[in-house]
Amino acid sequence: MHKHIIADTSCFIVLSKIEALSLLGQVYKKILVTEEVANEFGKSFPNQVEIKAVQGQSKQQILEMQIDKGEASVIALALETTGSTVILDDYKARKIAEHLGLNITGTIGVLIKAKQLGLIQSIQPLLKKIKTTDFR
Image 1 (cartoon, helix red, strand yellow):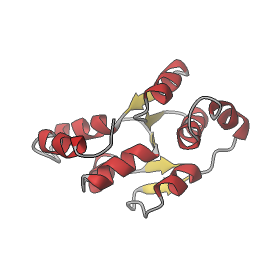
Image 2 (image 1 turned 30 degrees about the vertical axis):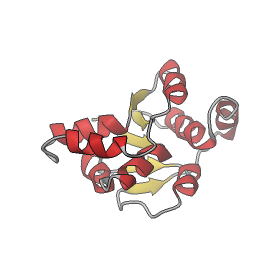
Image 3 (image 1 turned 135 degrees about the vertical axis):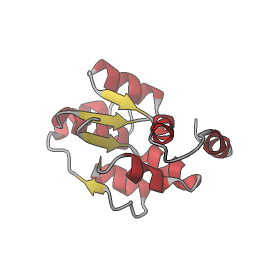
């Protein structure tokens, strides 16, 4: 398991919509988010979530030319945080993170990990719930 998990807003939104946000904290004991992600989500986080500021604003600003502020901040924080994995769902953000050599997973990856850890019996019911949301 990687030392640091840094999550984008979409993961929190989708898991909240399907009433499975607690899984994130069960799968990962500590999750970092940026101030931008906290502002985008606008709700309280599980106890395992820590808000951390990006130090190198120039990297984030360059990334914001291509992707949204939350995703840019997540990638920028991951570049500053050794041994991190980012939770990103946006295709373009994932491609940029991959190009920068970051470890990537997504919301579906969190559900798969929850299944592997025996936290849920099946991901199928949760995938059905996700299909009823605007998640893409």
